[in-house]
Image (cartoon, rainbow, N blue to C red; front, top):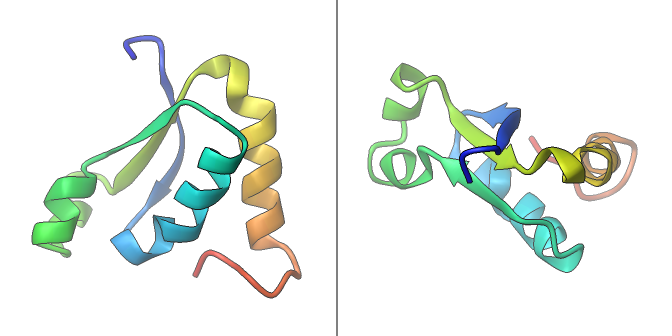
Length: 79
């Protein structure tokens, strides 16, 4: 995981729930840095720089596609 890069940053844990499901469906290796801290103390994530989505660089294209899909005009979106 030392080669993993940050591809997106979120402020609240509810913003990452659908994304986790989609990444699992695509079998992407990922983790969310600061997720545990943010779930216990929600506003603490801001002090830590947010909840960071970390992925392997080889998965960047598929993750960007998923992020675009969730930001787009679909009925399910990241808020």
